[in-house]
Image (cartoon, rainbow, N blue to C red; front, side, top):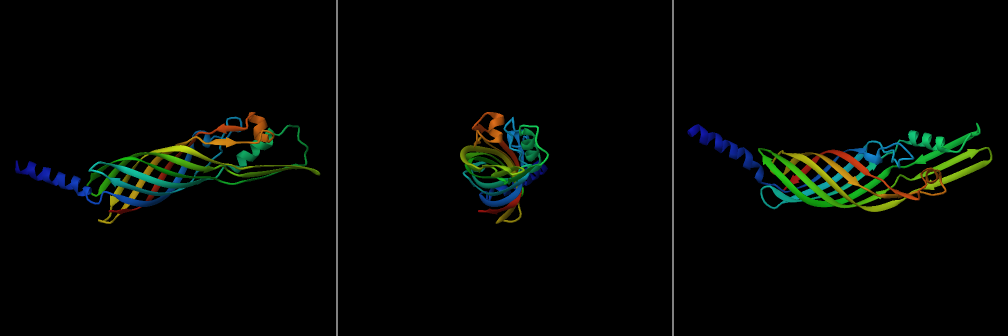
Length: 234
């Protein structure tokens, strides 16, 4: 009986040690791994040609009781496109046969987007760890990858440019673990799935517009964000 009481007391001590300093404010960074149409390399399927990028996140949580709280997040992400694959697809989409002196000069920037979201949090403290589960939603400000395309054939030159900005609904589902170094700071690891569906506009007289027959299309933008950072506990 004494051993049972001792083991039970030790278990309670391990579990409830994490209850203090449950709220946090954190800064983290990591990789943004694209999927869905965002990562697809196809003009006909409205692909974004996105490659792995980076994400920077300011996050925080206020725990209302032992397990349930409210989480907030502001993220900034950037994903470069696969410029080589995109350029080859554009060149192959040109009506042919092409003269041998045709040159294609393509300049493409990065996909840029920032998000402001909030939602419920469940946290489970165990010893010096906090296991966090959150589902947050809010607004995504996205800038599509700007591009400039020059096609030259002798003295003839064709120029096309494209850029755009959208504001959309977005959500993020994820989990994380905080290792409490001391009473004030913790190391935070997190993995989140981000999703939004922006409307991307194209020039109906341009190459992409003539191929797809669209002036705009909705793209599924999905990423898996893997972050590491530091959190201030309070």
